[in-house]
Image 1 (cartoon, one colour):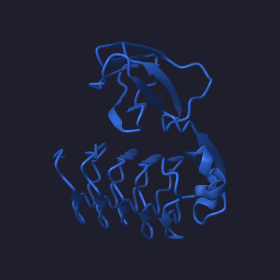
Image 2 (cartoon, rainbow, N blue to C red):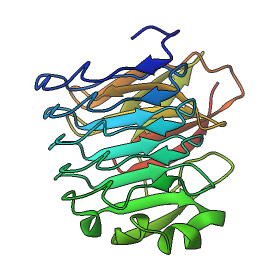
Image 3 (cartoon, rainbow, N blue to C red):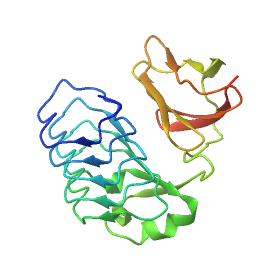
Image 4 (cartoon, rainbow, N blue to C red):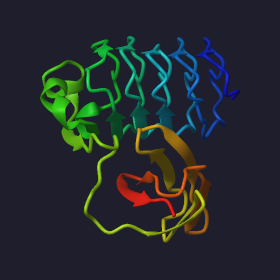
Length: 220
C-alpha cells in the first residue's frame, strides 16, 4: 500500500481469502466499512497510530488471532471485529478508551482472549463495554507501548537497524516497534529465523513482539 494513502475505502479487500498479511501505512487515518471482510487467511493486523476511526472493517476474519490497535484510535464502529473466531490477543495502545460499539467483538469470544492496555487506563477498560468482556487483562509498559515479559526469548541479533531473530517456531508473527509505539517492521519466521530491516537508528530502543511475547532491545 502507498505510504501516502490516507483512507482505505469500503470493500477493497473484501473476500480476499488468500490475503495472509498486510502492512497499513502510517499515513492512513480511517479504515472504512467491510474493507477486510472475510479475509479468512489474515492472522494478525497492526493498525498504526495514525488511524483514528475503525469502521466495520474486519468482520468474518476467522483466523485473525492478534490485533494491535494504535494509540490514536478514538472510534470503533459496530461489529468491527465481529466473527473473528480465533481472536486470542488484542493490544489497544490508546490511553483514552475508544468509543466502541457494544458488538464490536460479537461472536469473537473475547472471554477467551487477552487484552493489553496502558497501565494507567486498565481499570477504565475493565469497566467499559465491550472491553469488559475480555477474559484476561494485562498492563502495557507505557514508555514503549508494549509489555515486556520476563520469560526467556529467542536470540536477537542486530546490526545497523537490521534485526535477526533466531530460534522461533515456523510461521511465528514478529512485529517490531520503535520506542514511540510506531510499527517499524513485521514479518513471519521461516526455518526458525526471521530478519527485519527496521531503519531504526543505532542507540534507539526497539520493542520486538514475538508471537504473544515481547522484549526491548537497544539497536546497535
